[in-house]
Length: 211
Image (cartoon, rainbow, N blue to C red; front, top):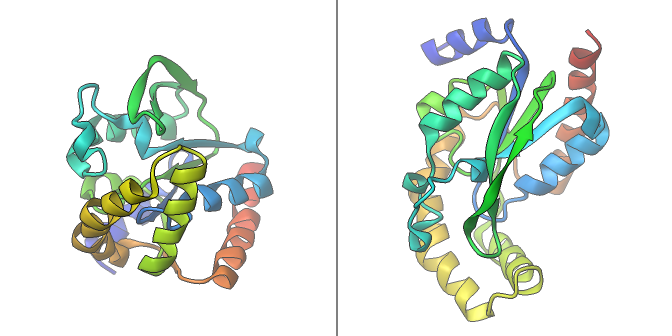
């Protein structure tokens, strides 16, 4: 067992339980979080995202790059949430790719579920996670999901979606995100294992909530 895993095992005994959902663009992170929250009941878990930690003046052209995220602020917020404190977080508007002019309070609950592409890339963030999943779906499948999402839900032209995916999102995925898969507790790469893990984690987390 490596040093990182030893430290993580020791921390599991203290504070609220922090679960990370990681993967590339349109790998199903939000879907996984929603499915897990449905099993647990949203009243029993706190849901938040890497998107809540964008720098105030980040470069919109590079919004998918890790330097746009304030991971120091994320780490501090994770510490507070694990210790049971409420935190105030910015709200990121994915349609306009900008921070909203208000903050939202996030209540700390026994199960904390954080999703984001770079959670396992940053050593200081993955070290705070008690457990994690990496969603590893094929490039073409993720591209088609992104086209459908961004053209229908966000009104982006298909050409823009494809260009951003190929020139930005997928390059980052190959260079930074895929290598971080090695740090995940679980790796999911098909719908069957996706559903099974949601159910298994649901049972496990219910036990933590009731303890």
